[in-house]
Length: 231
Image 1 (spheres, rainbow, N blue to C red):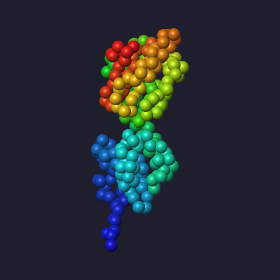
Image 2: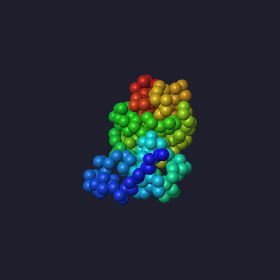
Image 3: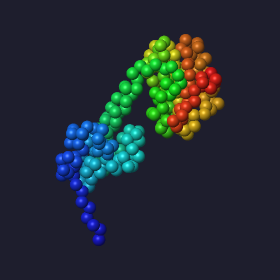
Image 4: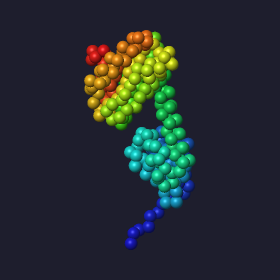
């Protein structure tokens, strides 16, 4: 005969152990990812508390970063996670992402390939598909914005000069740094990467917007076309 399983609802926990109260008393940095997610969820369901539901979600997706990438369809299959909770989760995680991006994009000045790579490495090294992006710079080499130009497959990302320079012109950029990731983790440029770069440089010369570099992002490492003499 199986032993009964006893569950303690958050409201029945000692006050000092409740996530919301701990956050107010100790600050959000004192809480685990599970506790923070439980606060976002607010409630669980008849068979699981908010903490247990948060534990199940993070366990299934593998962490907060993966949860951010989860679709509404993937989330809503969990018992106790309806449309309202999906909206709460996605809105809170997106706000966190935007705060992080706002801090990063405080008009940094690009003086080296390492400066440019540092702006995108943590986000792009974990992507499971190729993303082709551009850092748009003013005449002082300050970053005006980062634009995602295209999203491709596991090993390719189609890019047309029209899409790249439309974004650059819209932002009145003087120059661009091309950036794309290799989901394999190996940043070695392919022949296609080299050919695409040459085509974009030629288009930029015609328009009057200089392509300053092209970075290929791998797993915590990168290759700069300019540093390698590939442009």
